[in-house]
Amino acid sequence: MGSIINGTLEITNCYSVNYDLEGNEITDEQKQFNEGLAKLYSTANKSEQIIGWFSTTLAPVKAEKKWYQLNAYYRSLCQVFKPIFLTVNVSFEGESIDIDAYSVTSVVLNTEVLAIKFTKLPLSASASAVENQIVTGLGSIQNSEIPNSNAESYNDLQSLKAEMESLMNTLEETEKYIQQVMNKEITPTPEKTRKVFNAIASVPMVPKEEFVAMFNKKLQDFSLVSYLSSLAYALVENVEVVNTTAIQRS
Image 1 (spheres, rainbow, N blue to C red):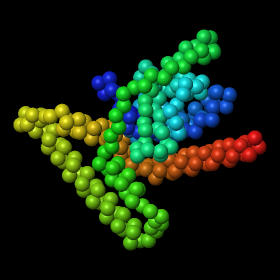
Image 2: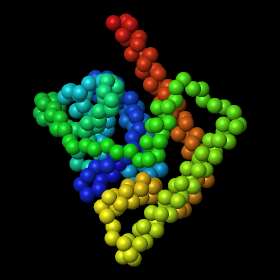
Image 3: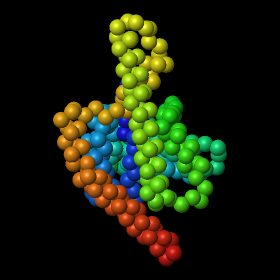
């Protein structure tokens, strides 16, 4: 999910859906699950829309009929002309995770797929300061247990408070910078303008009344998301059990 800015697709969010593609077809249950998650995400951030789909891989992808089926489905959901196919190499063989973007083109006669072509697209990846801190923190954890004491919870709240204060300071500085530019007190630079745009684009554009309503029912929304997460986890477990059983029988 993301947005289109001056002809450039910016991917800012994603969610996972498990497709098994039995008979090279996407089932109605999979479509309903996908569209339900998309509705939840779009409710939280109306500036994002579906712009494509992604797949984790262990090697460079090859043109296969299953990619055509997924591409055709997401083409019906995307507001862009063609959805973007993003691949994430999770083999962890190198020092970094390889991410590639493709445009899928197919030649179809009646209902038969005659050819599938992948066109590689230019791609650049970036992370915010908060995302870098999270990745660094996860990388420093070595066989540590999750704390469950009141003292640790208090420390977590203190850390959250400090992060919120830092966020508010950043917002105040950004507002001051924008005001100075509008008053023609300073000349904007492309680099700073891009940072300000990314910061503003990351904030959900929700009307005040709608935000208040969402805040008042946050527990209900959290319960719904927790339920969907548990359901997704259960579905993944069931698929793994079925796959394991099928492999053992074969």
